[in-house]
Length: 387
Image 1 (cartoon, rainbow, N blue to C red):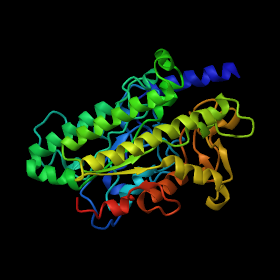
Image 2 (tube, helix red, strand yellow; image 1 turned 90 degrees about the vertical axis):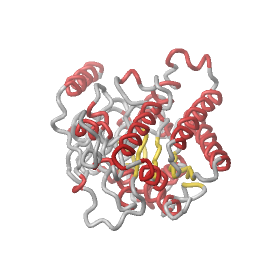
Image 3 (cartoon, rainbow, N blue to C red; image 1 turned 60 degrees about the horizontal axis):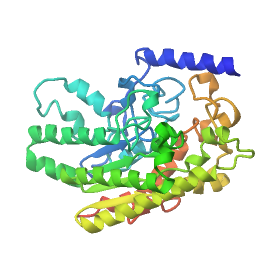
């Protein structure tokens, strides 16, 4: 097995060094056709691989999904940089909001170049921008061993840059109104555990007990939300973390015998989610003109795992694309590693869910269609608020 792993790793390194000609970001015309009048002006996305739609295609990193079989069930049937076989939650939410798929910030920046800022140049940003970067964490150092990424702090700085660009083109008043009425989606934090705390990078466990580390993360998120508030962001969907301890990677790594989730990891995640929810409630109490809807991804995911027959899944433990027990021993790098029907699986690869799960979670964020996830309001209710 060791020679095979070494061979696959070398292949991955080789692929990551090649141009991304296979990747294709969907144009705005490839998003939902005949869309109704948008419910909000724009959707802005901040996050990690749960929300990345192609940012990392432009970075030197191993954390990329611009190769097959990623994207095989996407609208274009081509890899785009999304860490799934098809759509991810923000795609479904854009559709619900009547908006086109949100393009990656780096793609828009490259198109704009260094020319003057005008209405033509910022056309791709008017209805939203996606800043999410795979391997990114709340802490800047999380995920660094995988290569380049755009951390939470850097993404918020990019949002601030976008605000300035829009203000130059549209005027300050129009930009303030745009940001106040738009939805900002935040989904980040898993890599602070997967690629930092659980790996005990720099002896972090010696310096922080789990609850202390969680408090550090929550305080950091709050500061960035305050930075967004300072540039007139008022509507935020804040995603909690999924049951990381149920991911095929950790089932394999921790030697789960019969697919039982790793309680130690999940307990730490639950504690983080609790802190995130409390912080969001406290924030909107302090700033009553804002609305943060905390969405419990853990709760929504566990409902799927515990009721797989109701949702139509055949397996809740094995990745569709992977290697070894549970498909969690090695990452998905070749089409031949993937199962034939991803819709029967909860997990696409060692860490990420399939398109089917992403759709279910998005429907819960929108309206609690399958189980209530969002507090105090779901996204459908949020967009109706006059705040």
